[in-house]
Figure 1: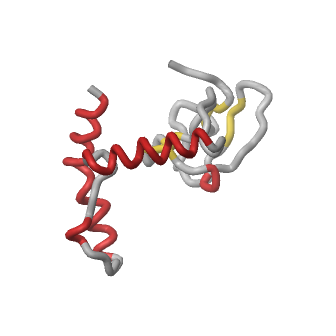
Figure 2: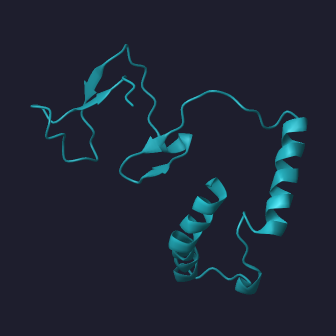
Figure 3: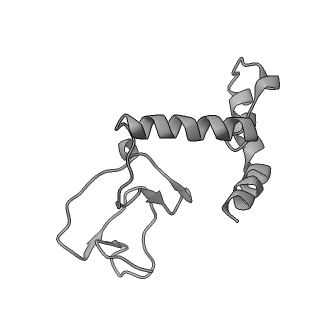
Length: 114
């Protein structure tokens, strides 16, 4: 089921990434373009992950990821401002026009929702 969804995503969005690289003028051999889930590459990826894990460079943990609702994507730690919160907190978000559900336009942080 997961692999099927990945291939659907690649069909819908994969060309956008390469088109962006092309428009930036990337000089690469496009005939050698591959996708991580291609059969040959997926074996290499699994092998690389196993080696990293055996060397202690990669580990599994229960932790939160950085998710951007605006981008609908995970984002790296360098794109996130970390702020320690003591529970439910309402904050302004400079890059957003404001929360219509809050009288001051602030957004709620520090709570888990499902």
